[in-house]
Length: 169
View 1 (tube, rainbow, N blue to C red):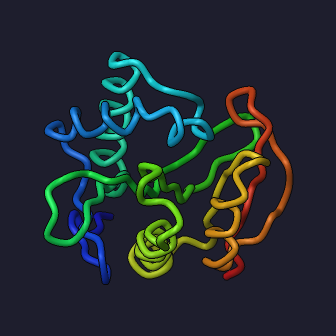
View 2 (view 1 turned 180 degrees about the horizontal axis):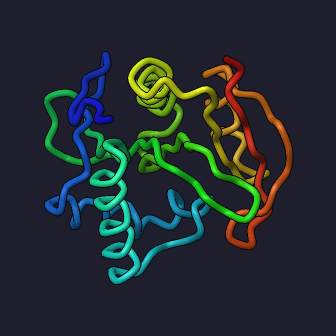
């Protein structure tokens, strides 16, 4: 099943991740503040691998990462995603979002993640959806709660203690 490759919200435009987004991803992944809760700053090699993995995800599942910019803008300010997360104890579709710090606190994460939530429910007809945050990332926890996800348990993802949130539908 495939979903919209582009979308618009009240203030944002999203487009399916593409090879042309490599430089924008490098900019995002080099920002230490943005990447603090996402495993740390990524090298260019790690960012290239991230791009490759997520392009493969789109090709395999028909959904994945969307790059985001302000409506009418040309600069990437963040990304939002629906993607399969498989670990030793988890095999679910995860909702994720990340923005440059200059765009924090303005509701963009909730706005773009709501699009993903709607896709998960309506287009993908998922029975559940998860979100993963580090314990100190209270902003992301608030976004997941606003979307109707609840803290289900504590878990470990890639050797990092995390909170696992789950949808209520």
